[in-house]
Length: 182
Image 1 (cartoon, one colour):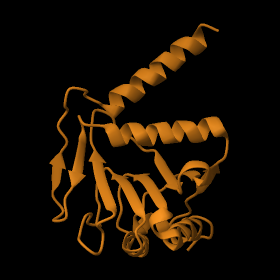
Image 2 (image 1 turned 90 degrees about the vertical axis):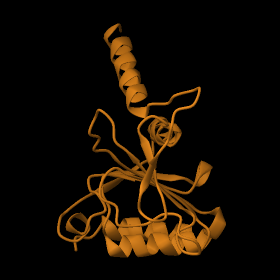
Image 3 (image 1 turned 90 degrees about the horizontal axis):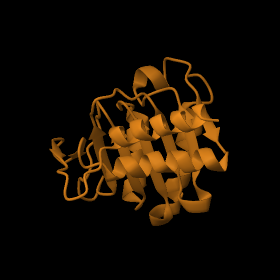
């Protein structure tokens, strides 16, 4: 396997696992079936680490299984736009480490291809990644939450509907309008 992608990510998962309930893992990918990564996420959950996963498509991990993956939450957001961003967050607050990457957590990507994950260190970019993640967590228009049996239940909007894709579109539009006025 090419060095750099999977070993770097596994080290971060393992570091959060050692922190137990003080650990945190937040991931956004389109698909996941890598058995090694999933096994480490299960160990992290068993150690008490909060694991929040956005997996748009194929996901071979089951969330919320008592005494196994009860600290893992898996959300699929399928809306108007096909998103390809991959975001990895390890830790919270000042200790959080942010990465962006090119690959889903599929065996074909983690073992058979040359993929990269790059650290994000600029405070403004880290804040933007956290904003994206928090907005996706709040989505109640397109989000579907995985149940322990593998089925998904759609979140229903309450009084305050949050459509993350519509919000991101509006933010990008406003940023473009403001930059063109300069």
